[in-house]
Length: 167
Image 1: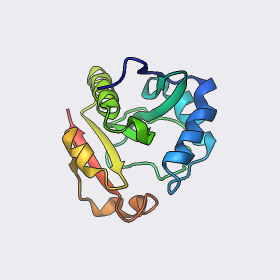
Image 2 (image 1 turned 30 degrees about the vertical axis):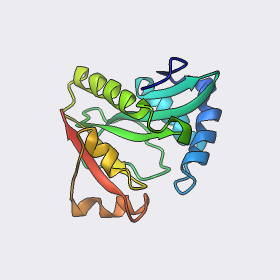
Image 3 (image 1 turned 120 degrees about the horizontal axis):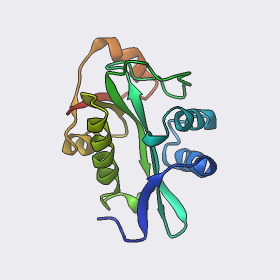
Image 4 (image 1 turned 90 degrees about the vertical axis):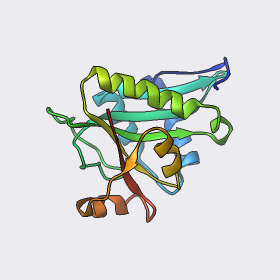
């Protein structure tokens, strides 16, 4: 359970430097340019959240409507969101080690799933990395085997798995 001092809130443009610093610290093997985060926030503010506690950011979530089985490659600008999205893509949910096991990730996944239901999208999708498949399975996601995704998954590493949760 989250501490009373830490809570998820909407990401603001002023948060972007701290979010990018968190990304570099949490995911050094998956570097992304600051422009990627700025673009996601500009394109879809409701999908960008930060976990703030004791006056500092300790986690972030980046997500947006997208196309089923067409995850963006790592460190890629989107340009625009699709006019007819068919899934809701969880680009990244990243927590400092001190926040892992607190329920923070599950809390933001639940909140985003509620948002997705309200938008009437049929699923959430993501690419699981760093052996996180077990966490995502506990959140209702299942691995999707699709040979057409192999090239895009390569940019995320050898253990990357495309996963989906139907709503």
